[in-house]
Amino acid sequence: LHSPPRFSLVIPARNEEKFLPAVLESAKIAIERYRGPRGSIELIVADNVSTDRTAEIARSFDARVATVEKRIIGAVRNGGARIARGEYLCFADADNPLHPETFNELDRLLVLDAEGGVAHGFHAARDVERAVHDLVHAFAEEHAAVRERLGGAVDGDEHARDAAAHVGRAE
Image (cartoon, rainbow, N blue to C red; front, top):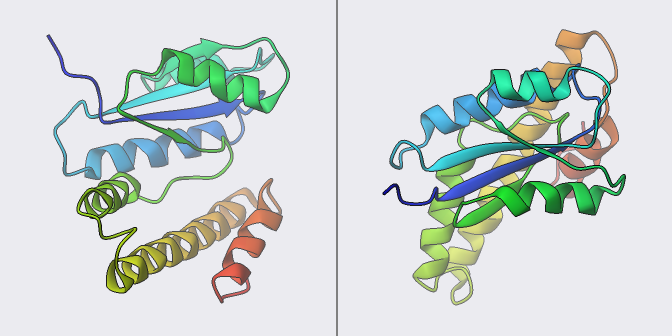
């Protein structure tokens, strides 16, 4: 018997064939860089009855596909979560790549939380704040690289600017 994955990454998507490959590639890199046991992360795309190649692309990256007909983002996320087997659910947008250290950082924060550090101590809380700060900056930098590769504005530009400005670095 296999033990359940530590993380289930659920990516809700509708007609995302343009952006999904970059997101799934970034997820694969983050999975490969994860220092935990192999098989600790499952990849799920919650396909909101796309009319393009979204589901086909997801399967080509060995993602499990949950087809969800209801056109409400919460229902799409829940549809992906319903088939998840992981100990922890993670959600990502279909148009924003993951940082390569995402799962290692999540693991670090979960260990810190289990030790009581996140809830009980200034030093640990500051570490969490720093980790979030670093991940937001990495996201903003990766987002800028994707925008440059695609030759213009992409979905999520406003979110990248807001997130970077919130942690002290406006794009």
